[in-house]
Amino acid sequence: MDRFDAMQAFARVVEAGSFTKAAETLHMSKTTVTQLVQQLEARLRVRLLNRTTRKVNVTADGAAYYERVIKLLADLDDAETSLPGAAARPRGRLRIDVPSPFARLILVPALPAFHARYPDIQIDMGVSDRIVDIIDENVDCVVRGGELLDQSLMARKVADLPLGVFAAPVYLAREGTPAHPLELEDSHHRVVAFLWARTGKPVPYALHNGAEQLQIKGRHVLAVDDGNAYLAAGLAGLGVLWLPTYMSDAPVANGELVPLFEDWQLEPMPLYIAYPPNRHVSLKLRVFIDWVVELMALRVPVVTRQSLA
Image (cartoon, rainbow, N blue to C red; front, top):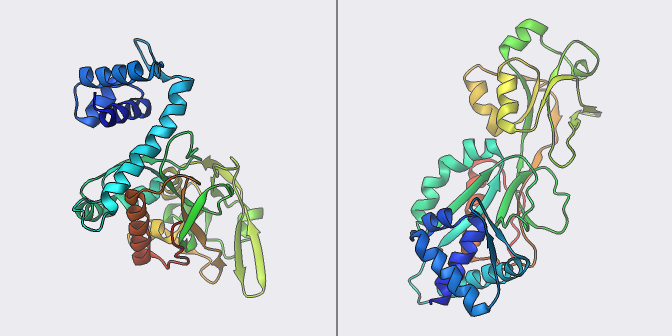
């Protein structure tokens, strides 16, 4: 039994939740993966996985062993790629989670350039606006907008996203164009509300025009918790939107959205990459984070460039 192959097979079964899926990603047969895990259990004299006809669950011993295994595999990978004379490049699987508009408009279109630079890195991307438990879900890093409330995470601020207020022409033709932000609070005007994952509630937006400062929440007939659905609702004329400009640039250029309150300024939205504390930061994660910083520098100003610990 090759212990490295066995540990890798075991880790992939835990992450995939099945021997079949693990075998596909490892480019092995299901029989080979099954035999490797069985040989590992025999060597350790511990049951690592509970198997049923429908699913595979990790045991308590297996969960503890898994945490040690993934760190060991990362250490081995980093050791091979850190030698000055080594020809090895950053490689391995990188698990990330990003907001859906960011994935669609910025990250995914740029990935061919990333893979051209780092062809041996495989990215498994979760696309959501939910709060991801980085530790429990074994995610290497997340990209998130807004202030980070979980102070236990390590984070790198990569940009401040400019915001604007917008509405679709069909909405303005039906409801009229608001001349002042306060009209969104006390009239027939409506906003599309965005439900932030950390609170489950819409949050007010801060605007200022000289000495005048406002917190606007607005009234809504629709609230959503996904950025792509939020934009689609605004384009359909369901209300006024508050958008990062990277989401509004194309619709404004195409005449699908109209900027509002252009004399007013909104507080920008910070964008962070967060990753688990006290865990080995592999070379593949380092180069990915540096690449995202480089990518965002081309799109919006980079505010902070802290080095990784």
